[in-house]
Length: 493
Image (cartoon, rainbow, N blue to C red):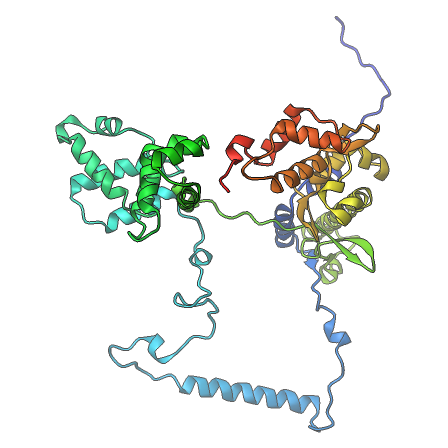
């Protein structure tokens, strides 16, 4: 083949750096956006944040001098003299040398610290720690305080490493014994004895090999005068399977208890924690900052951006005045580039806020029934419906609604919460799947705990309201709501 040059005409969409930046800011969450804004403020000298009180001096009321009669210059001189005297008096109070066996806190009390003391009711240990402590670290800390031989401490360390996040022992004692060197001459009785020591650590019920042992460990730590304690121990030791299957008649027969007494025993067991390891949470809490706020004023719903996540940025006028048009020096080129980037960033940020507010307003208009009456009045909504109204692509709407939250009088919801599929009704209309979930939750909350509603019964009740939903769909919605089956929801009266 012979190489040749061919001239063709065509159209091609290319993403400019400005467009890429706008898209990147659009799909950021609130926390990521705040970090991006702070990074831009630190790296670009042309950007500055407009504070709320920046122009407060110009709008401040005039000073009333009718009683003092001093001029501004005299006031400044008096203030400086008072500050100098206060500084002199404060330094004169400090002795040259402190007495022996005297600490600084015994003489001077700092007023800069605002943290509550450990003895006060406002003390929160988690507020002073920068990272959470995992379960193994918490147990090893208790192990270091326990009195053990070196051999028992080594066994306890292996046992602690074998405990899962739920607090249960993940390996059998034989497997733990096999992990040691035969030359160490460790017996199975030693491993079991050390396990009993570890099971005395906090949280109560830790290092259990099964649910029965976990509950028994917690029952053993209760006071001996606890009502129905002995019956609860017998139930957890010998009849826990019957409790799991809700076979209360068989339990009353085995334990020789009446219904009211069995109810007390079951309530005592339900007060225990089947997953004691969950009490030690190693993950940091995740905070949600709403992007938009919906409130009702004068019988009208209003949507507005959260001012905490939409700071006002502007170009620093002082640095911008240093730029000279005809100057091609490195410093002038740097300032010109930073000025252009600052303008792009401000424009991209404004575009993000405008798009977010526009989409949130359309969601409010479409789902007004939710804000007035609750989730049961939710309408079916897809991304294409909003995209058509605001004149944007569905991918843009998807970016806007991902990890963006709306604060409403009914709670904080992600924008994607207001989008759901539809189910046909007997009258030819449509019902939102979110509304169906809300109806299922309401039906389950009002059911008889001794005769809970089955999935088929819930489907029949929905059909009476004109909503045709299959039993499998009811089961899927119920599981997504975290609602157990009717057999597991059955309770004693």
